[in-house]
Length: 252
Image (cartoon, rainbow, N blue to C red; front, side, top):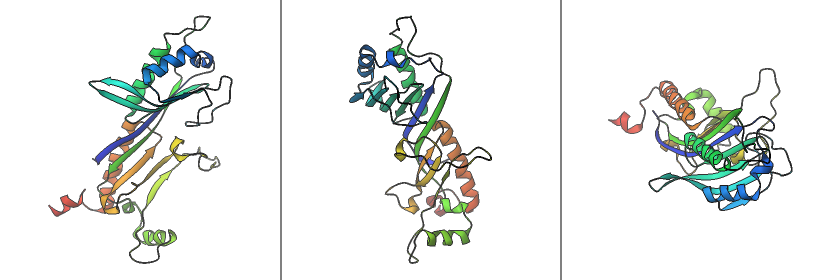
C-alpha cells in the first residue's frame, strides 16, 4: 500500500432535476443567515458560482457562494470547508478532508435549510438525482513513475522536456481525460486548474525531490476510490520497476 497519505481536498456535488432545487428560497436572507451561522463562512456572496463540475447558468437570483467555513465534528474537531456553492441545479462542497466528510457537510446543509419552506410548502432541496466527485491526495509511492515508460522513451522524453546535460532529471507526469468513443476531444478545461473537476493528474509534489517519490494526485473520484486505485497503481509500479517498495526496504 502507498504510504504518507494526505487528504488535501475532496469535492462532492449533489445534482438535482429541474425545479428540485429552489434557488430563490436558498438565497433568501433568513436561509443565508442560517447557513452562514452554521458553517461560519468568512465570506458569503450571492453570485454565479465558478464552474467546477460543469458550466453554471447565469440566473436570477444568481446563486450562493460561501468560502472558508467549517463543520464541527465534535471533540474540538472540525472539517474545514473550503467552499460551498449553490447553483441552479447543483450544490457543491469542497472540504480539506475526505469525500465522506464532504457528504456530511452536504447532509448538514440540507438539515439547516429544511427548516425553511416556500410559500407552497415545498422544501428548498428535493430528491438528489446524482452525485459527482473529485479529490486531491498526496502519497508516497514505492517506485518512480518512469517505471511505466520504456527506457528508450524516457531519454527521448527527457530531451523533449529541454534537458541540456546528464544532470538534468526528467520529472514524469501521467494523467488524462475521458472522451466518449468516436467523439472529438474538446481540449483541457478552461479556467483555474484548481476548480476543474475532470480528468486525472499524477505528478511529483511541489518542492519534493524525485528520490522522495512524493506525488500529488488529482482524480474525478471520491477520495476513498482514488486511494484504492493508487494502491493498485503502486503494485503495478513495483512489478514494472522490479524492485521492492521503498529504498530502506531494499537496503534491509
